[in-house]
Image (cartoon, rainbow, N blue to C red; front, side, top):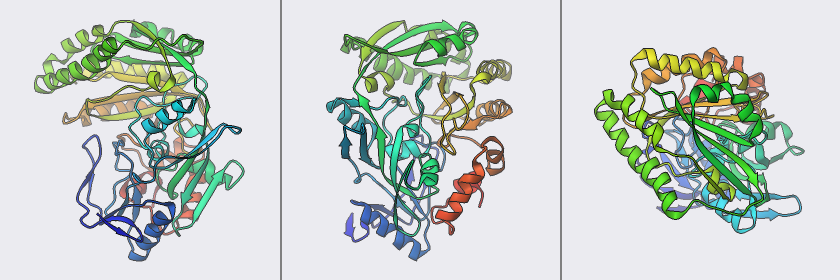
Length: 443
């Protein structure tokens, strides 16, 4: 790499690929700025050269939301905590900071985010720009925990936003899809470090769906995994605890989280891909392999877990009241279709929030995520699942596979026009364009 006034620019750009392996792009150049000033200069230069600009994090999106043949901004040098404000209980962090580094740094300071997703490989800006979320009765997505943000806009200027400063931009840019500018810093609400007790327990799917409202109401964070071709689930309840801390033992943790959830699971995926007819039998065994366990630890060690088996994913948010019907329809579709599905279906929830294009914008939501092992044909399964999700006015995760377009989003997002009008104002020449944004937001 050679250093320039516009950041660390790669002379030969090469091909960029996402984590799931289903998206590739060949940008004209890649830039790794070391400061906001360098990033803004790179944006201005791209505009002068007539090149589109996209920022990319760790590539954990399964859509082409970050793909470009123009200038690819790599924010890996824009990392670290800028400021901790213990009076306001906020932390300001550079956009390229991986969530795992933020979580560990906050824990060392005796602080934590309130809620988080189930993996923490993403950058903070990539995670929030696509609406990454965990599960929660009262606490919402990572984006909903943002109290302020800094944005480089299409003319290379730096905009600071909060509920009181540029509030209309703040309302949208917390989940901005990379369409409004390039996020350079985020300020999150934090709280004193706390303990969570996790209770993991197998449960029949019929019981989970029959008692879902009660399970949701009685637990701060409830989620479950349904194993297709079976009537079995594994449930997880996370609730705050007074302690004492009782983490999973090293050997037990390795056995459950590495050996079973990654090692054995990887082997079953290989077997399933080679011999699809074996998948229902494997699923029945897999769904019984994980036994009940309870442990208490700091939040990021409870909320997140390693994901080493690579996959492709589709996830939709449906109204929470529609969850049981939607999942029953999905199960019936799998049973009559002849499809062989080796990956569990993940179900989580989030309360309504006030972010313009958040998947939980204005409505209590349940998330249903379907996965297929990387390299396995997924189109038939995802197409059939998407037909069910959209019948319930589902909203797809912005970073996961879907086929919806601007016309559809204008129907399912009451504030869609508000977002596109803001885009017209901030980026009238579409510097931050790509094919994905053209499809989901219109030209």
